[in-house]
Image 1 (spheres, rainbow, N blue to C red):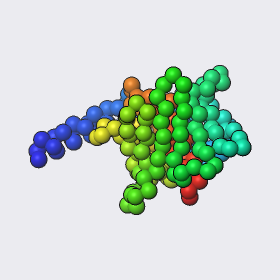
Image 2 (tube, rainbow, N blue to C red; image 1 turned 135 degrees about the vertical axis):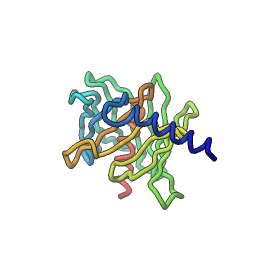
Image 3 (spheres, helix red, strand yellow; image 1 turned 90 degrees about the vertical axis):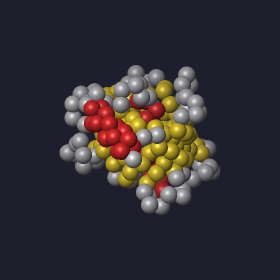
Length: 185
């Protein structure tokens, strides 16, 4: 029992070194509720520079958001088929692992989604998804945090990602979560 408490205490100390002010995590700024098919928006880094563009395309069979570099290079397609299983979006990527973001339909106590990566990696997403206060975790290790508390603007939230994590996949999953929450809400 003591070992488990000590392990959790060490885990929280490690999280504090990576996340929060002065931490080593990379921070991005996003605008909520601007994600819609047919619209484009930018994800900025901590310095306010445009880091990624999300290009909203409306197609006949499926809605697609294209996650791009500022120069227009496609990184990930975020897709939902019009007639598909409700509560999931596919993140298609060439040259890297693709993934699916799925809503946990059984969990009624807390918001919970899972990011299932094609390489077998499973990342838990827990917290208040609609209010942009949640974490991405691999087992007990927090790898990213989404929060509004870092910004004063009402429609803005941040995404902090630990060093070595797949920033592009985490940010694309965050966009997919935003879309899923607003589609279901």
